[in-house]
Image (cartoon, rainbow, N blue to C red; front, side, top):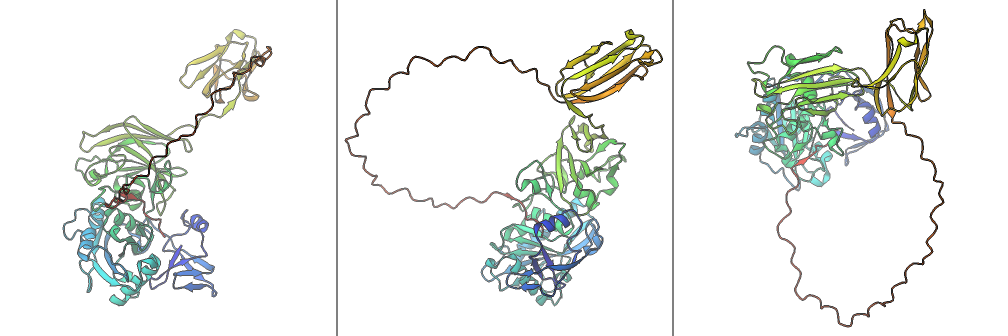
Length: 561
């Protein structure tokens, strides 16, 4: 964890471990940018490593909104951005000021960049504009620092901070612009980029300052957006594996992918709040449209962009239409997506749960919540996905063993019958007043029903009849007063096995009396008499002169500090 002084200088807090961060920041108890740390008098600061060693005292926090409290917590409006090019002792940021300005703001014709992306996906509600002032060239400035790339990003960030304050005569770089992007020279850090949550600063490794997905992702952290993962994946994909939106992996592509945020992030930002529906426990059935059709003139009043259900977690359902501003979505194009995240709309990771085609469904067995896609019509204008969100009853408890029915008859035993049906209403076994034992049922869910044709049960006006139904040694249901019928649902956890096979009475086959065959008599051949082949006289083939290929195009962004 790192903290920042009022002047904007950052220090790593050595006394805070990962468990503290996970416990307090991971569940939203504490929020980056809102916690004040007061250190004991004996705390030590190491300027060479930018570390604070020593325990801290009190923590203070204010209320955090959907987009934090930085700049009032608004997810809309205009925000200035300053891009910082760095000349270090050993290396410089590769891109020129002109190239950086084009990659971030499109000043020379770059079609997809930080400015255009947020403008399009927010439908002009959030606009990033180049910072202005002396020493700023179309939103970009250059600073010179004494640090080398080998000193690491923490040392270099603080030197950049000091250089900016000196160059512009401010106490903190956030006085220059609402958001400040540090473009560090190659080799300064091991990751590719990171952004401070609820803050003004984002940091990029050299060329990653030019790539739109990294720009959008890291500034998203400034806006209190967390990562988008795939819980079914392994490794870093569990955190970054949701490729349907920009808070998953970032890509070394100057103009892609052309896709917006996923449903949990869009709900948090509130850009489509007039086309969002919060579903009650009674369920909902209706049409979903894609983000690119939000302002389509043919959108009906009941068409929605996002449907959300709050249970023990929040579930989000959306139609990932692959067209327009979302035409480059990397996963789940033209499918219905199901996401989840912790309750609330502040900082919190989201997970992709399902990609559904027409006729598909997703069920949460923890919350007994189901999403069914009735249809997807790509030919209509706008394209629509008709979905149904509903709760379902939890399955009955399951038991192990064979089932048995025992009946004590009343005065009219001919009126009594019973059966066991599977979940498809197929009768598997049935009987009369005599009952039945040792009924073997496969793993699954069933219904036991007892009937009285006269409609007065088997107790107590005409005899004291009763019945019991059990599985193994567990009594499932007993009674007698039930009118025409009484039913009980139950489950079988595992198929009972039949009785074990009886032990064989035959004696085992005796050992063979015929001895094994004789060993081979042939002796091994004599050692070779000829000399081995001479060593080659030609020199080995020289090493290839071509350089290695470029690294893979995708890589996860670093975790926020």
